[in-house]
Image 1 (cartoon, rainbow, N blue to C red):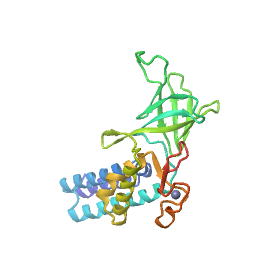
Image 2 (cartoon, rainbow, N blue to C red):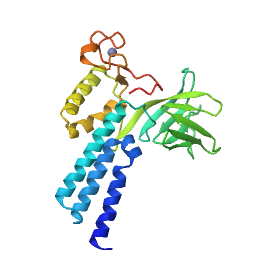
Image 3 (cartoon, helix red, strand yellow):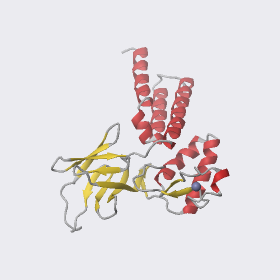
Image 4 (cartoon, rainbow, N blue to C red):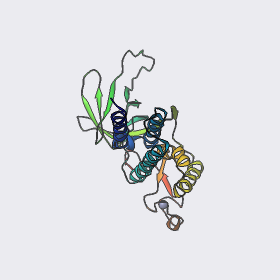
Length: 242
Ligand SMILES: [Zn+2]
């Protein structure tokens, strides 16, 4: 393989990562950072120069901002890096929990030694399937609602998420959330990518979401009855609101 072929092949790999819509929407920060690290490897190997690297990184950054915009109007989807409790929509029953794609059924005897897992989640373009072990029976996850074959429905309540290798719990303090949203807004307006990408996963994971009535708009928030002027509400289970 000559230089041009090697360069074309490696650029093609970078390009297909850039175009990986699912990866980008699932984890925009990891997507952008992965593209940047691919480009710096290409520089280290002498396949591209720093000017080409700059252009490629700019494209990766633009893709990130695009994903952020898209996610704001996008229903929440099952996230493979998250843990969820599966709670019946009427609150009567907890089926179990999903931790990083593995389902653990709730058992009466919590000390029972487990030799196997009880199911695994497989994502697809429109949602995900939970395949129970060992029966192989499948339940469907769409948005943050799981539907069993008999029609019973459960909300996926997010209880934690792996962010940069560490598992965090949702922020449930309103003052802390307000401060985070305000800081993120400043970073977004200033296109401060490094600051914004540190904050976005925590806003996404938080127990709150933007008020659907006033949309946290400064001119409407103060008189908003839905959120009592806070600009955000407690995230309704399974609603798909962010
Ligand atoms: Zn409001």
